[in-house]
Image (cartoon, rainbow, N blue to C red; front, side, top):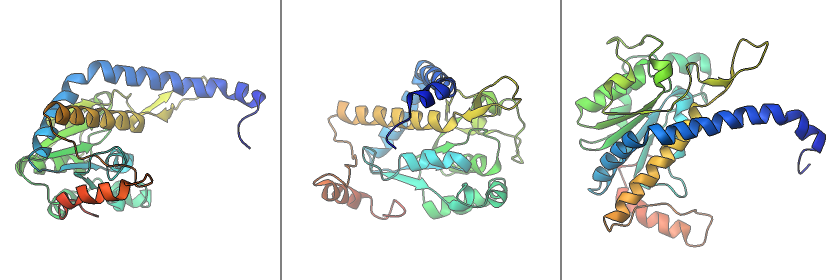
Length: 257
C-alpha cells in the first residue's frame, strides 16, 4: 500500500494536525529564545575542535537519541564521541535501565572509559535534569576541566525535586544550558476526556537543537578559513574513503572507530 485513502486521511486529520501544530510552535520557540546559548555552546565546541579536541555527548533514557543523532552520521562532525551504553537506555529492560540512571557512581566509570580531556566539551541531555547519572556526569566533568553544555526542560525540571544527593539539578550545574522548551511531563497534546497528554516533544526538540548547533559550529570553521571535519554518506561514491581519512585523525579518541 503506497498511501492512505482519502477517507483515511480525513479521519486522521485531527490527530496529525495536533502534533504538527505543537511541533511548529515548539521549534519556532527554540529558534527565537535559544539562539544566544546555542552560540555560546558552538563557540566552546569550535574552540576545542580546532585545537584537535573531541565533542563528547551523553544522554540517558530516551535522551540517548541526541547522542546517537550526531554520532558517525552523514552530514555530521567526525570528532564526536558518543557515550552510549544500552543499560542506560530503553534498549535495556526499562525495569533495570531506569534504576541504573538513578545509581550514583555510574558517571565516574563512564568518564574514565570514554576519556574526555580538559578543555573539551561534554554535552549532556536530560529532559527532567533530576536523575543522578547526568547530574553526576556534569559535576565530575567540570572537576575534570570540561566545558559542560546541558540540554534540558526548564518547565519540567523546575517543578520536581532533584534525585541527586546534592539536591542540584542539571541546569544548575552546567556552564551553558539549552532549554528544549518542552512542557512538564514532556507529552504535549491534550484531548477532551483524556486526563493524560500524549506525544512527547523532547526528542524532536533535542534533535533540532543538536543539528542547529552542528550548523553553528560548521559556520565558525568556515568563517575562520578552516575546513570542518564532516562525514559524507558512505553510500555515495568516495564517501568511505573521505570518512576513513578524517577518522584517522581521531583514532583512539572516539570509541567504536
